[in-house]
Amino acid sequence: MGPVWSLSYMGNGNCILVGKVFFDVTNPNPVDGYDYINMFDISDGRTVAQFKAVEPFIIRLIKPLSQTRALVAADYSGLVSWNIKDKYLYEWRLKSDPPKYICAGLPGTALIVGKDGKSLSTIDTRKGTQLKQSPSAEAVLGEPIFVGSRYYVPVNGGLLVLGTNLETVLRYGIEGLKGSVSLVPAKDSIYIAGDDLLVKYSVK
Picture 1 (cartoon, one colour):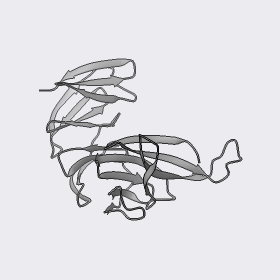
Picture 2 (cartoon, one colour):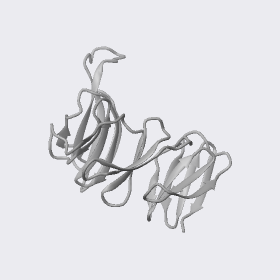
Picture 3 (cartoon, helix red, strand yellow):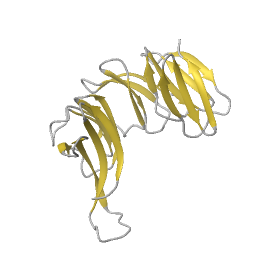
Picture 4 (spheres, helix red, strand yellow):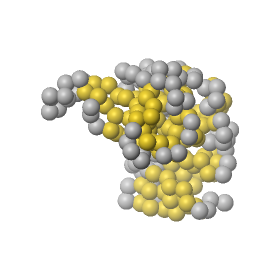
């Protein structure tokens, strides 16, 4: 077994991990291996489910949508929906390059930031079909969040506020916002953390 590089809490005491299995465990610097997905009970560490439908390809991203469903992005597989029960089956598959970010929106929808880090689209998470698409000229700097009925997307020098149809509601300029950015929702506000910068943005 190798390192775990992703942990996502699903609720009900379960957590999904993404790790790597190396073929040659005797090598102090192993490189050949494959990613794996396990769901475990956080109270005792017991494995309660596994997902192998995208093995042996590189897993790029996993995004829980609810206590019973998660989206998985992997090389060659694109984007698939897992019901956290079936080991070798997925509910649907969207053939595309693995997205860079996924943000759950209104029930049954999600915002997808493409592999290029710029293109934006929304999908129906129940069917795996694309709803809207909007090429963006701005690079997305971090994972978007959804608050109320708006997507908040960090971009160079600002925060892009989008409606559920990807229409631009507002672009809030933030001088010096660059690099890797994290958005943290709070009561009536969003904290925007960038390189050497922390901003509180009030949500109306």
